[in-house]
Length: 105
Image (cartoon, rainbow, N blue to C red):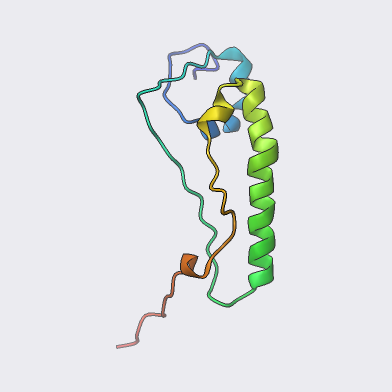
């Protein structure tokens, strides 16, 4: 609606990527006093398809660090300073959630 000339909105830089096609129609203002975050999780079964998990994770990090940051910069160069990507960028053993199927009663 904002891109169509109606109203205003509070959003995160990453959400602006979803509306990049209308971003040229909006004015971006940075609100320094607001702090937000977004976490992305890649879930997999423990010890299952680890190579696939690592490839998906690497491709996601490459996309976020490359194309997504470049696109944010074209919307407004200040946006790239607002996004921080965890430098670890690798799945760890502790990132796995152990779960058991429900017990039959």
